[in-house]
Length: 449
Ligand code: GLN
Image 1 (cartoon, rainbow, N blue to C red):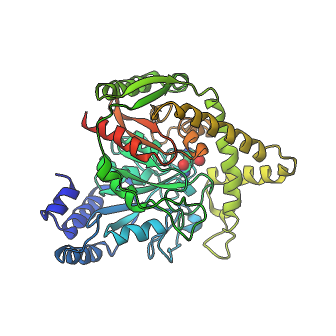
Image 2: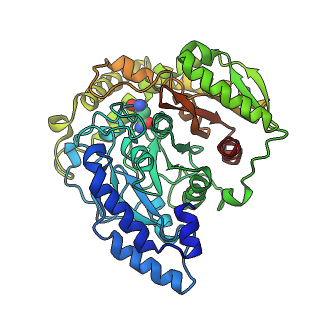
């Protein structure tokens, strides 16, 4: 039985659920390093939820323990972005997603480790030290939502929130063998998320199973009148529409994926596609000829937007002046972002990136127009060993297959497809804007099949 079923049947109280996770964190997180901070009030909050359960007025997430990436504001806990810059920054308010989780009686179990300011793909750039991959010992868990994915894989929480600017939910979901979803841009409120690149960032769920990922997504999704970038969509109901029947689904696979991802990863993805065919889906070939342009387009955009977002860390209002205390990758991005912004009067870089972004968006939407989903690999290669030195460009290359979804603003989800030498490998599904349900259904079919 999952914790959700146990909680719903009354076999487990919210307090018992939270206590067992706190004990697991205490016993094993010294080694994994998934959490920066646990919520000291978690047990107290669980008791209050148990009261509501007794009175029959508890919400959809009643008693579930939810781990939150350290770049999302949770009142009273630190939102550090895993940086010395915000080392002691205590969030003064709840992000909209946290308000929604609390309204449904979910319990925040703690704040998770990440790459510093979400800049990275490995979980190694945290000021609080690297996170281990619970599913592949000695290897990186992926990033930047490294602690959130690791917390799920290590059984430290029922659910987790991550943020995804260029793959930060999907990349660690793939490496840790869990479910991760990057929603359509604007589906989930960003209010209270500390920006990496505001035109690309989305908050999304990580979970051990598709049903609970769908549940968390439906709680956090939907229009927020206070936020200009949220879409005018009402409350979603993904869980009640979950179906593993894929008859009538057409899934596209781009031949370009084979050029960029390792053979053994492609093999696992194709194996998963064959399972989906057995469940009624048909698989066809699609083309993404501009796939290789997505990565430079993404990084140009991120450098400029991140540079602008970091100007508030001048040491007067929050913590330290960022340039004085940040790590190498964050500094590299600030310096490149400053340089590009200065040159921008000639429209040489950022404006070009915007043009390419439109091209990539058009290409993704065209490829999706004839199919329900595009499925492919998540990362081009397997996670490296922690501490193995890899240069910045090799680190950026992890994102090649995840950034197109952010540039196009479309939803994408990852679930484990198989393993290569005991290392998990995820399959990634893309859909048209707001068609998260199709991604969830395909993942649900794969999970059952
Ligand atoms: N790895 C990408 C980067 O470093 C993506 C980060 C993210 O999605 N937050 O920018």
